[in-house]
Amino acid sequence: MTDATFDLHLCLVSEYASANLTPLLDPRFRPQEVVLLTSDRLVEETAWLRNVLQPSGLRISELQLADPFDIQEISQQLEQFLQTVGERSIALNASAGNRPMALAAYEVFRHHNRPIFYVQPGEDLLFWLHPYSAEGHDLADRVRLPAFLSAYGTRVTQPGVRQPLHADLRQLTARLIEQVEAWQPLLAALNWLASRTDSALRSPPIPDHLNRDDSFHQLLSLFAENSLLLVEDNRLCFRDDDSRFYANGGWLEEHVYGTLFGLRRKLRIQDLAKGVEVERSTRRGVSRNELDVAFLANNRLYLVECKTKRWSGPDDAVGDGSSALYRLDTLQQLLGGVDGSAILVSYRDVGNAVRRRAEDLEIAICAGRELSSLPHLLQRWVL
View 1 (cartoon, rainbow, N blue to C red):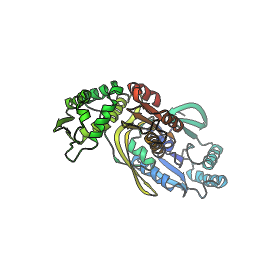
View 2: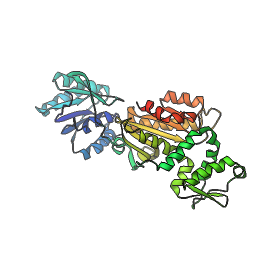
View 3: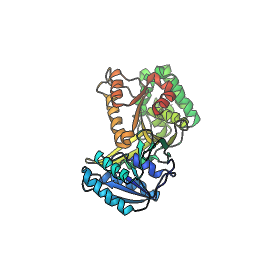
View 4: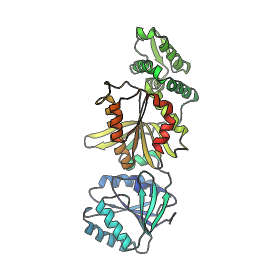
């Protein structure tokens, strides 16, 4: 039953949206109609899934449960529902829903000898539970970032950039990475100046100690050679806001994005963007965030946070590093569900406390000297 198609899928609505979404959008597997098993406790999740599926042309209907925790009541409703299905072919997607919903649906479908499948979390493989088959069905990677995020209640307000840097800038970022330790304090100074430009994109005066530093002027020359800035009247003058952003730490974001762009086929990346702006409604109003780099691989969301700042504290146990990790942890759960994954990429090294906290939160880290091995670390993280 490898490439089986059905008239109907019955999907159990829950916060685990991607397990319902990916089989419905796989052209080898998609049905003509989907029925969403839901309740008044799942109004938002149902609406999110509907909004993503409607452009696909699928017919969408709902089966409202009177009590999503009463197995006997759920079983009775599903028995009545299958009577209305008649001879049409139908399969149960038992991947989501709460336990009473999943157990009741499984038993009813198995009793009536109707097919049941399950999507393996994190691997995007579909397995048949009834009739049982050990052979997995690798689902097509058709979902794009806006649709995936929408399924988890997040709206993309700015889709971000999907093209890599010009070759000259890629060479510049490579030089910065190669000399990661030597450039650290000087890049911090450049970041500071770039972050404090006026409306004409002119920095504050260059401090005397930097003017006396030949290495700092060598760094400025690298940026000037790429037409990113020039020095006038002892101030940095940036060509445009993109150049200012690049000098203010955006170069690391560009480097990570460019590395992933080069690995997109090897990692089976189906969508990749940087600078994605998103928003979602909360009880306190609208929450807005910008994602440095985000991508989907094998229908799983990956988030990358890029930092060039100096971390506070000797080991940053409760400072900026921990704050960055908690933000990443929150975003990966809100935006990617149980399959979300995140990594913190830092130009500066991070302390042991931050690394321990990242390990507890299952967030990967690439920092300091590790940047020279970024392609290898990204492959290990994704694969």
